[in-house]
Image 1 (cartoon, rainbow, N blue to C red):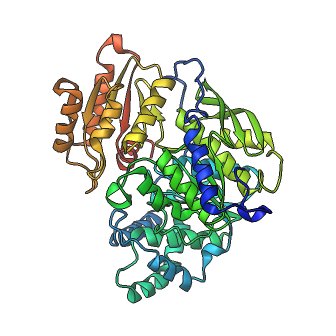
Image 2: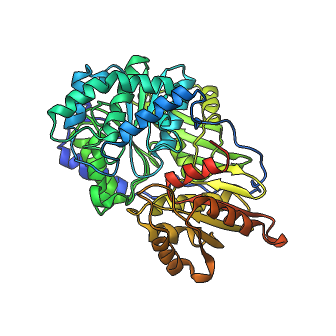
Image 3: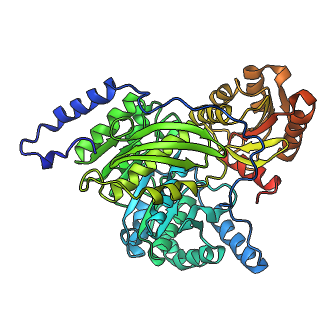
Length: 507
């Protein structure tokens, strides 16, 4: 771990002095300390079908499908995830009438801007490898709402999802009647997840925040481990306009005496997190200091890693995901699980290397540089902000030897669309702009206007329908023999990626 807690010292210093020392150390260190040089690049375009499926299809039974649609419709009638009243008052009231199910198991709480879901999936896989029963709560979903609540690494069965909703529905209505505002879509789902985990029961819950931290609906848990993935600008209208302001909201997941696993951060965001940790006597482990990526080599179907955890070095770890950002997510996930087991603070030992290797080799992260078709290769990535787009662009450039890459982009209207397009501009030969089917989607003509400013008129094609956009991009990728190694990247929104996944036969 990093700093010993003040209560562990015989001559504990003033908290302000401690904070200043930690900030100075974080500020002076090389921000690229944990970033290592990639190995040789090899062609991935025809490496075969990706492993397994982590995204469930619609229920095969018509009656179950009908019942699930009814639940989805009822949930959709509530405030959506983009309409918020920032408090935990309503979710706390629901937990109270449900008997505080979120206190029936320990938890690992994950916040940050990018990488939360992939990190949650890795943490879950690691815990499962040590024979712990897990519950995982993530958002948004790629295709099916049931993806958001997982037990033992698999999305909850539709029948169980429906039963859970029906079980808590009377209590939801009770809270609705007592509050100025009804429980939101996300608050009800959070209540369902916590109730399902208690009912299972699980040994540990892995919980991803929906937005922010302090007032996020998930923040009625008292996690012993708080994970902070990289912070960048997103949801600036609600969380703040600087990394420091956003970090202030996200630091709310850090609880008294917890262990904080801190990924590489902008210095001002790191300062906020470290200050909060000092205030609540939390122990901090920082990427690049207490843990990190020691080496990374491109491999067929993913990458081969050596990770430095809190308890030592872990070699020859195959991760079937692309991109340096996923290697860093793996280092964060490993350290979070070590911290959960008390390694680095209470115990000086490493976790079983065979279990670690097996866990990482099994990780799936749908919609994150996911190959869903070959000839031409079609890749899906749910990047929806500039930082995510930059990570995806770097990852696809490193792992794939495309001679020409066509982008299919459909975004939400409340995002930094120009920043996202600028991050992709260097790697896209041409771009097909489109829109998904939701009300949040940016109008295709507005998106096209920005795209023309970024790419130039001759590199932009407009297709309002996503199916037409996919067909146009595939045609562009195939149109000339000299571009036989061309590919397509579908991106801009989790919703766009999910709808593309269905259209391409992956649902």
